[in-house]
Amino acid sequence: MITTRSARRAANAAGVAIVVCLMSYALYAQHVLLLDPCPLCILQRMAMIATGIVFAAAAVQAPRGAGARVYAVLGAAAALTGMGISGWHVHLQNLPPAAAPPACGAPFDTIIDINGWAQGLAVIFQGSGECTKIDWTFVGLTMPEWVFIWFVALGVLAVVANWSRVSR
Image (cartoon, rainbow, N blue to C red; front, top):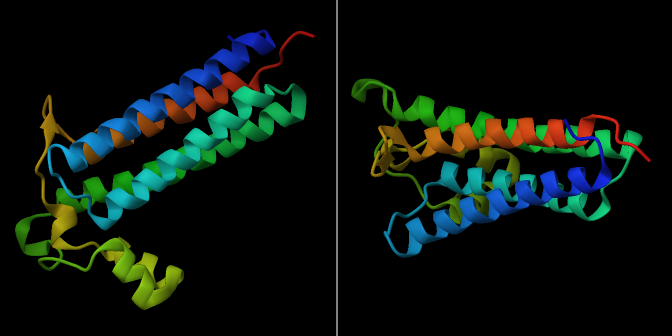
């Protein structure tokens, strides 16, 4: 239970550190392991960065009362968005081959440039063959499954760190 502002600040700083580590590994996987991110992976990264920004702002400010609850809600919303994206990615990866989306779609930036944000996101969430490809696992779980787990943990941390009352 978080009972002081310094504990709140430390918990939010831990959230920032977790996000930095996860994003560092994502960049390592992309640039060293040469695993190119699919459009859904890019959206998961955006949601992860948004979650980290909420943690960073909460760590710097460490507010009391309603201000802290705003950070709890924002952190939970960013994490829930990421959970939705990674959950959909997991769903696409687990479709039977006959129901899988067609082979390969355009890269993320091309989809957005051609279609605009609203329609581009709709196209991205239809998925493509590159989103269904599993080219990385750790203890039997794919990267989107791990990302989903981390979004759950970060969402819980955002609420635990920022919802409770702290002493003056």
